[in-house]
Length: 97
Image (tube, rainbow, N blue to C red):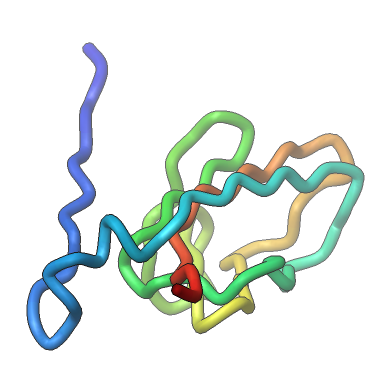
């Protein structure tokens, strides 16, 4: 049975118009054995989804398998990827107006 998760938009002190002031980015990484990745843009904290080979990873302190930590534009995985793994990161970032 599939499990669905809902990502809620952040509350105050963030702008109530955060949806209008942000954009969605999707980045894909393959062929790497790294644990740290630099995203193109600075992610809005709590507005990301990280998938490893199609499995949604849990946010938190890295060190355990299946976890990650995202601070600004640096993503740190709990365990290194295999060269055959596919990592997909979906996140929102602020758009200058």
